[in-house]
Image 1 (tube, rainbow, N blue to C red):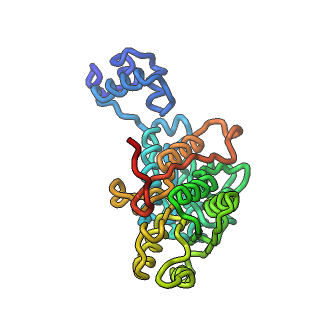
Image 2 (image 1 turned 120 degrees about the vertical axis):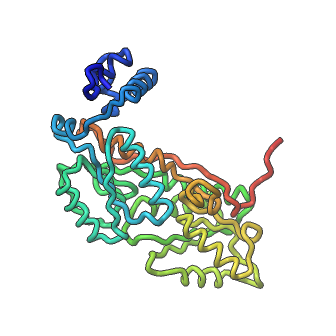
Image 3 (image 1 turned 45 degrees about the vertical axis):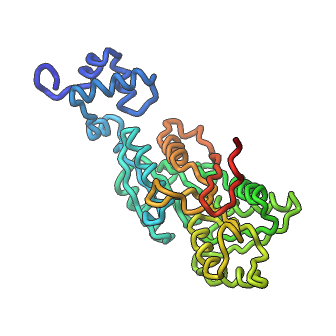
Length: 334
């Protein structure tokens, strides 16, 4: 509380922290400053009970300090983890997040864009499945995993490199007859590059590879039929499988076990996403892990940039391999 009993101001925080008023303003608006300054300002603000008046700030800056997130689902582990990290990244910059869940419906996505404009948010982030999505060019908009045009920034993990990494790890673990299995949206997107990278790497090493690329509406029966067709005398002629998502790898493992095959003893599996049970426990499978937090932070950074003329068309972030029990890992050295 200020000395006169009124609500503390930024001037009070600056005086308490021993810093310039401009430094306090930068911290409160999420603009980078030295770590020592940031901590001093935060301690002073907490001590005085200072809170940012977002409404008043919005009137001065013509901003609402809110951003929208269009996402297909919150029940899927990857989407829920992404939404969590986007919310955290926005909160760290003094913004609130308004989520719009579309259930993979392209028309619902377009309706979300209409509602977003009515809510006067400062920008939107979209993980969408509508290739013809119409977005007001005046609305700051950043996509995840879906390239629209050079004027709409897209942030994604290195899907092509991730596919190559999956092939490399399976070959290192003794696999010689590989397969890529894919299910997902029929709308082209960055995730399709996972299989492309896998196939290119295999062929560059002279390794046999088969692919089965399906859409979500095709169900699991075509995958079951594919596996049965490669069964000879109770053994699978394929010894390494890369799945386009961890969810698919989980379902494929169940099919293999129903056929009497062991994972990873008979068949090794690698998925893609890096999802964990209960959000932070064991992995569902060995996986190519996306940098979910980095994806969220990078997307928010681009969305909130003041200069909209210097935005990247595409940002591709590196992935990592994590063993999760569905591959035969080499013994640790030493």
